[in-house]
Image (cartoon, rainbow, N blue to C red; front, top):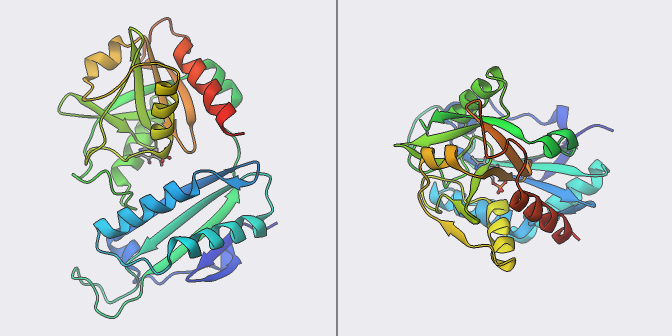
Amino acid sequence: MPDIGFLNGRFMPLDQAMVSVEDRGFQFGDGVYEVIRTYRGVPFQLEAHLGRLERSAKAIALALPYQSREWQDFVLEGIRRGGYAESKVYIQLTRGAAPREHLFPVAARPTAVMTVREMRPIDAALQASGVGVITVEDLRWGRCDIKSVNLLPNVMARQRAKEAGAFEAIFVRGGEVTEGAVSNVMLVRAGVLVTAPEGERILSGVTRALVLALARKEGIPAEERAVSVDELRRADEVFLTGTTVEILPVVRVDGALVGTGKPGALTGLLSERFRSSLG
Ligand code: PLP
């Protein structure tokens, strides 16, 4: 079955979906996006993702061509057409095609793209053993809360991680841990869960919010505050959160073991609660 493409309100096979070379997403990275996955065929946290899409678009003064209700219908229709056991849906929205000029085009209409592909779960062995991460300088811009299609620093960082034999790159800005290239980062020290606060330095992760809520429900103290890279290195447990990684234990930071070098107990408990919350 071909992967599903969607362009400005029309579904088509993905390999037939084309945008102009003058699209501002291509020319300037002038756009925003979202990633949504299904569990048991149902889009997970769809409203939260569409809410963030709306906030990202507003932050770059981009008028959404469709309301949340319409997006919901498109996402459901895309999933239906794909027919996969589990789907991964990308929505990308740019300021449209126009002659190359930095100023916002007066006449251009936004380009709305969606792709639907099969979602393969993260390798169970990785989930069980935990992964290694490297730390890298956070060279991104000052509005990491906007889910912008400008992902070059993330691309460079993740490639560096791969070349270092690690799964993820953790950004560090001025000695503070911000987030991963494709995930948020949490640590546990002396029974307390700690993660960087919401704000312009991180993407406000949908999974991050869920995990914080689950922790609080379990009576695990959770602090949203600046985290130093030294704290990360001294943590008893570290894990990543994100739509694609779910809750993924980290057992090595820059080659040094985290805690005992095995996924920690609180990480395990939260993963278990997360799984059960999926229904
Ligand atoms: N931070 C960054 C930079 C990301 O790209 C992502 C996931 O796409 C996340 C955090 C996690 O966000 P979410 O849990 O909403 O997927």
